[in-house]
Image (tube, rainbow, N blue to C red):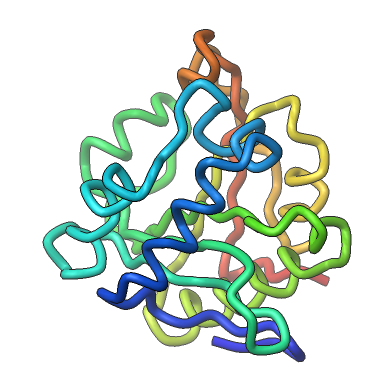
Length: 188
């Protein structure tokens, strides 16, 4: 997956990839928006949490975001299961369609606000729609994460429903937006 100078590659079962994740997931600036500052992931925890994904023991595809060939962030995607669909409640996301969810963060804060996340997510959406035949892709940012929401809207996601107390973050359950990108309504 690539768009301009931004590419996405599979995360490898390689200590360098795990160390990058530990660097990012112990950085308070990153944790403020992803996982929470009270929930760091030092190397041992990164290995425990991400190695099963890398080794295909979970139905989640972990990737690194590259900017000018340098790894600067993380993106994962996965097909929605029946229990995932129930989690989103009364929003009718469809029974017979193919739905994926995606999560991402830019781990190098000096690379924030440069459009890198938008390019990475756009490339991922193209891949999910064209190669994996996704009909819809979901993402669920905290309602307070205005920067992420702007990025997602640029990529064609629309706010569908507010999810009250959806995610535990820094000791409190936070409201999130359920946002959907639809293959039949691509970004302008």
